[in-house]
Every structure is written in structure tokens, then in C-alpha cells.
Image (tube, rainbow, N blue to C red; front, side, top):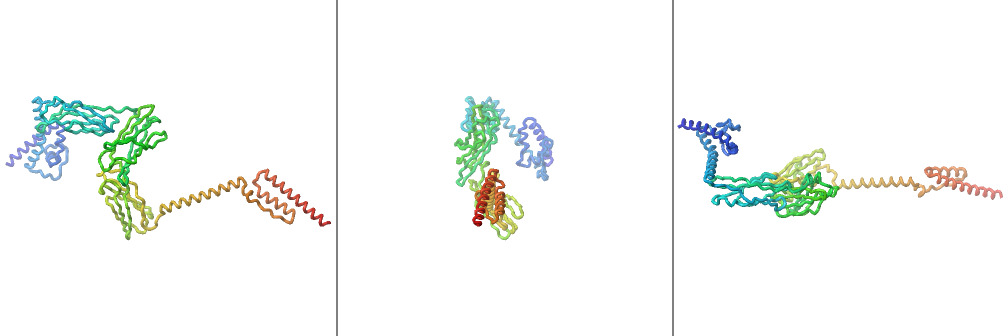
Amino acid sequence: MRTSIHTWVKWAEETWCTVIDMCCQTSPVWCSALSNVDNSCVRACVLPQLCADHWHSRSPANCPMTTDSDKAMAIVMSIFPVLLWRMMAFQANLLQAKGIQVLPPVNFTLTVTALAEVLLQWKPNPDQEKNYTVEYNVEILTPEPEPYETKKTCSTRTAVLHNGFSARIRTLLLYNNSQIESNWVTAKLQAPPGAVETSVTNLSCVIYTDINNTASLHCTWLAGKEAPEDTKYFLFYRYNSYTEECQEYSKDKWERNIGCRFSNTYIKTSEADEVIIHINGSSKYTAIKPFEQLFNPNAIEKVNPPRNVTVSLKQNNLLITWEMPVSSFIEDCFEYQLYIYNWKMDYKQILEIELNSFSLSIDDTCRYSVQIRANHQSWCTEGFWSNWTEPLYIGKNQPRTPVDSKAYTVLIALIVFVCSTALLTAIICRKYHLWSRLFPPIPTPQNSLKNLFLNKSYQRARTFTSETETEIGSCLEDLGSYVEDLSSDVLEDSCNMND
């Protein structure tokens, strides 16, 4: 009995390799499908041993199929897909032999029903046999390939349309687990008109969610390289069936719209529907080509910072706790980053956390600041990291707080202002001699006429050294009058004494 099994296995090995040769020569698709059977030990153990020349795959170190009985069972299991494929092909040939034809659909049309939305419609061929089950194989060709099957005679697809849209369809006739395909029927939408490189570039959008889960939308872009200076861009967004045009734009130096803000939208970041952005434009010099882009709202959401962050220190153990951000997502969807800075040692570290608390042993003689931010985990569709929370300080050697820094800045500015004002005042006074005019020197009379004349001359010369020639002449005239009056008084006194 064992000898007969061994003989059968050898025959099966030779037959299997022959089938594989035929398979690879006639139908590479089926051959690839057979070589990827990974739900058993067939591909991992038996196939490499039986047909090593046909597959260059791995073999496990300890393969459990070592007996002839195991090999026989593996061969039967691995040959089954080939037999099934041959049976389906035989049934299809049988249907064709009976004269049953599969006819393609008719009246295949493409219609734009909304921003970035196309309605595909067709009708069954009226000459098609009605006694069999019919389905339709649809394949989107552009902008991105997408094959699918449906039993309906219409289908809606969301896709960017600024470069056009094309699709094809064929009929599938099903009979006893076999199917026959008709020829393809193709339809195409032409790209909208517009000059090359006049459409916007570098479009980016961000969604912000407030405490009431109301989403705002902010988008920015750059004008096309060949867009004239008088180009006016207009942005529309669509979410589900709602479409809205932007009313709040930001502009570049040529007054062209390069940004848009929606303060309140109907976007729900917790849902899977895409946000469609459509930007068209106008110019009196040329046609502006429109541009469309699809966004996953979760991927462009700016996550809110964590709430109620607290820090506490027990001996040398730092404990940090917080609450999840304001969001429509569940708590398990979030991941966090902790930023811990040691002010004394000038050392920082960033830690990634998935929980809502964290503890760390630290040097309690140092001063630390703690900040935290949040984002969605990858399995919840990662968005943009939130802003860092305000720093919380703990430990000794507290650094200057933001309030102290502000007061220090104001004080420095005040000192600079006072010094600048004083210096400016001094320069003005010196230039226009205001000090000598406001505060003239008071002369001190002397008993001696000679000393009085010298002191007066010296005082006037020192005070007005920087005055103009006219002022010096005036000073000398005053001095001469003063000397003459004084000499007259002295002479009169001398005459009276002689009398």
C-alpha cells in the first residue's frame, strides 16, 4: 500500500509540474494566483519541493508535510483551483457553443452633477438574452484607475475633473458560477478650457474645530505661473450635498486672491466624507484653468491642545495629567507629545505618550517647564499636531515668568525713551542757545573798575563763545555803555568831593 501511494505521489508530482508549465504558458494571471496560495502549507512547503524550478520562494525550516500521504493531500488541495478554473472555462465555452451572446450596454453617458461628482448611466442592451443573470463591470480610467462591479444601471463617482474624466463598462453574464464578458464601451469628459499654468498651485487647507465641534476651514494657494496680474480666483467647497463660495479672501501684492477662510462650515471631522475644494478664475487677457482637490477632513484637521494639564511633584517624582482635546473623536484615538525642559541644566526631552498621564523621576533641585500637544493616531487618520500648551513650571530656580518679562521689556523701553528725549532736548538747546537765553548769568559788581571790566569781559566771552558775530558785537556795545556810565559816576563823585 505504501509503495502504491509513493508511486501515485511521484506521478502527481510530474503531473503537477506539467500543469504548472501549461498554466504559466497560457494564463499568467491564474499562475500568479496559484503561486500566492498562502492560507495553508501548500505554497510554503509542497510547491517549492515539487516544482522548485517554477517558484523561487521560501521554505520553512520545519515543514510538517514530510510523508507521502501529506504530500498527496497537499497536491490535491493545490490542484483544486486549476480544476475549478478549467471547469469555469469549459462552461463558458459551452455557453458560447449554444449561441448565447453577451452584448455591451447602450447609451453609456457621463454627467457632471456637482463639484467633482460624475453620474455614470447606461441601459441594458435590448437584444440581450433575459434568462440569465447580468451584472456590469465598470472601470474608471482617469483621473485614477478604479474597477468595480454593480447590478445597477447607474453609478456616482467623486473625482477631480480639471484634467477630464473617462470610464468604460461591459456586461457580465453569469451562469452556474461561470461568467462571460462583453466588449467594452467607453465614454469621456473633456477637460475644462483654460491656459496652461494659469490654475492655482500649492493648495493646502486646514480645519479648526471649536469647543462646540463647529469646524472652520482655512485654505491658501499660489497663483499660477502664467496667470495675469488681473486674475481673480474664486474658491468653492463642497461637503456632501452642501456647496458654498468663499466670502473672505486674503490677497497678494497684485490684489489676487491667494487665501480663503470659512468661519463656520458643515464639515464633520468624525465622518468619512471628503471635502472638495474647487478654485476657478477669470482674467480679461486669457482663460483661467480651474483646479480641484479632494481632502480627507481628518487628515487636515488641526487638533486642539489637551485640556486641564496639571503637574505635581512628590519628592523627586514628577506627575503630569491632562484631558483629551475638544473633539468628536473618542479618547483612544489620540496620541500626545510631552516637552520637558530643565532650565538649570539647559536640557530638553520630547516623549511620545498614548495615555492621559505620565510620571518621571527628576532632580528636584532643578526647575522644569512642561508642555504637551496632541494628534490623532494613524488608525484614526493622523491630522496636524496641535499647538503646545502654555508652559507649567515646577521645581526651584524659577525662571522669569512671561509677566515679568513683559514688565522688564516695558521698563527698558521707558528708559530708552527718557534718555532719547533728554539727549534730543540738549541738542536743541545747544543749537539754539536756549540755556543762555532762559538762564542768563548774573554779574557780580567789583570795587575796582579794572577788575569789573575784566570779569565782565571774561564772563561774556565764556558764555557767548559759540554765538554769532552779531551777538558778540552787541555784547561789546553793552559793555562800552556800561563802562561809560560807570566812568561818569566816578567823575561826578570826584567833583563832589573836591567841592
